[in-house]
Length: 207
Image (tube, rainbow, N blue to C red):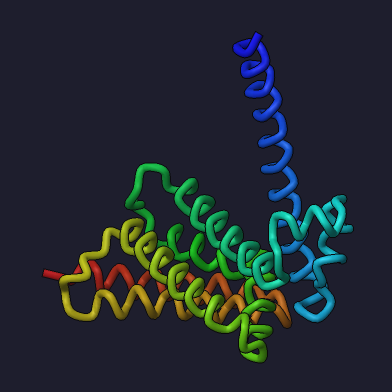
């Protein structure tokens, strides 16, 4: 009988774990949406829990503090962005550098970036939040840089290559900030074309 009970217990745990993962996923997605729509001030745990369709107690079971919830949400955003970018170029380095530049810019011109930005602004004024977001942003920045280097087939042993790739990412972030105020797609496309040409010149001239 003991063996039968153990089997039933194991079978019951799996659906429970699935439900827990599903609840956590809903909370992260709701937190991202709330940050993008309402900013830090309007995105309380209660608001996120309501949007996710769970109780506040369930939210705090997964994320004991507000800072835990929103840093996890932005980390989730970063992982989603990286996954989406790699999925666009599953074979690795792309022949069309303009397509890579355009994809990188797209990372910074949507609701996911908007949510991250709200957290950065909040971190600048919240002492408890600042070190966590700073560490997270540094890690995300390193990962994005690695992805860009891989997709562009850039050899950073050559002088100036690393700075050129980092300049591309800084430019993409700047376009994302500008996009918060106005969606000037035509201007963005011209900038993307120019940066692709610059990358071709720098990367193809490396010895």
